[in-house]
Image (cartoon, rainbow, N blue to C red):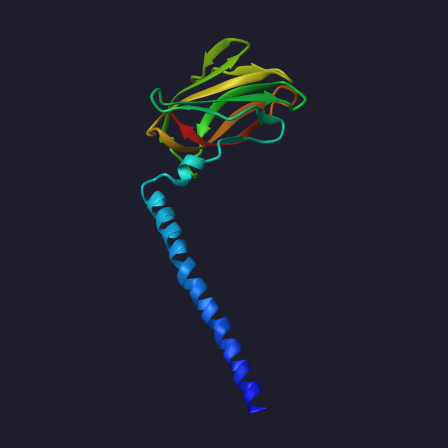
Length: 177
């Protein structure tokens, strides 16, 4: 019986030795791979900003049509919307949301293009957008460089049916070029 116990212990020793040999052999390879990933991350190859999803989100009824165009050299952010509210509206203003963190410090100019006609919003100017029509909104922002961009804007509009004023909030994320 004692002889059987010794064999069992030796079997466990062999399994432990095999596990240790496995770790010593492949542990170095795992360490090298982790070091390579660390080096790539350190030098910016695996930077999260390179994989930033570009998006434009707005409220239901005033949908973004596609991702925004963000031009750091011209300091402009442009995005396309479509009026699906079921009635016409008059767009009266575009505001930067100061409560939100973003790259747009100050809006210096606001313009809206509908059917090829561009109107710069100043003071009492407003742009009519019929139901089902599309518009390109452009703001000139100061204070952002090329790279990662984040901005939150509000489009102020009046309903042509009721005359009530509303704000549509847009969140724009992307890469400024």
